[in-house]
Image 1: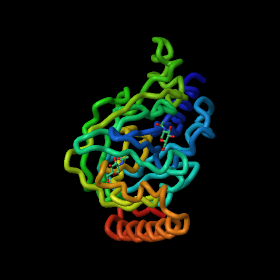
Image 2: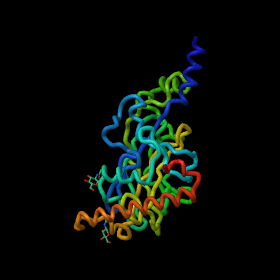
Image 3: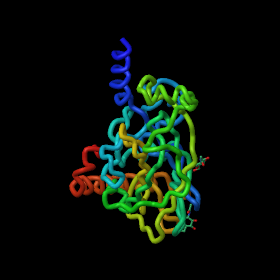
Image 4: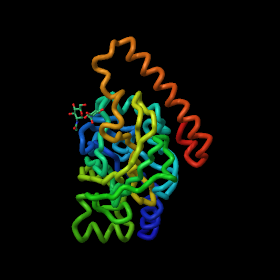
Length: 270
Ligand SMILES: *[C@@H]1O[C@H](CO)[C@@H](O)[C@H](O)[C@H]1NC(C)=O
Ligand SMILES: *[C@@H]1O[C@H](CO)[C@@H](O)[C@H](O)[C@H]1NC(C)=O
């Protein structure tokens, strides 16, 4: 009986999905954003994994420097077009980063496999081509070991032992926010077009979880170089709409080009 229980527990644990997601990221020169696929406050913090994990991105490859935007169980494949939904939530000014500056914000550990350490990879093409991206230096790290952290109610000795023995589910709700920051390499030039913005870089924030990896993809701009289309306040509505359409078309082309060039990530760019 005990061995049967043990077997069930051991088999069940790896199947329990677990997650860590990007809540908000700001640039050192202003602006803020959230990650592709994030649904915002409608997703509860505490609760069953099936309801708390819906907008956490899971990536296809275990390697941080790999192509693709990932997917969520709630929204399916993340796409560049999804950046419009991101900006509807967090505003039209993406994080603005000064030369050699940084991004900082909050990573939300949803369940126990969504912990740190996180890696940040900058894709200056803004297409999801992270295999040829550059790692940013993480200066404030999310706690965790190999992407795992004990749930608040697993942090005492006995529950820790039960988890080790496989008698307590690993992927439990954590529902904790941790600060995160990283230095974007000096000299970075962003050339992507996303969500009606030009001169955009994408940044992939990803943990090393064997059940994932988990994290998210955000868009940033280098301050001053980038934001001509980020200040459309004075433009007449019709002109603004025209710009948006043109930019969207450009984004579509950029996406298609990326698809051809980067087969590894193509399945995440529907
Ligand atoms: C993000 O920026 C918007 C303005 O674009 C602001 O209203 C909002 O408070 C900011 N959010 C955070 C978390 O900084
Ligand atoms: C946008 O760019 C202008 C210069 O082109 C700069 O003065 C301004 O600070 C930038 N805005 C942000 C939010 O970085």
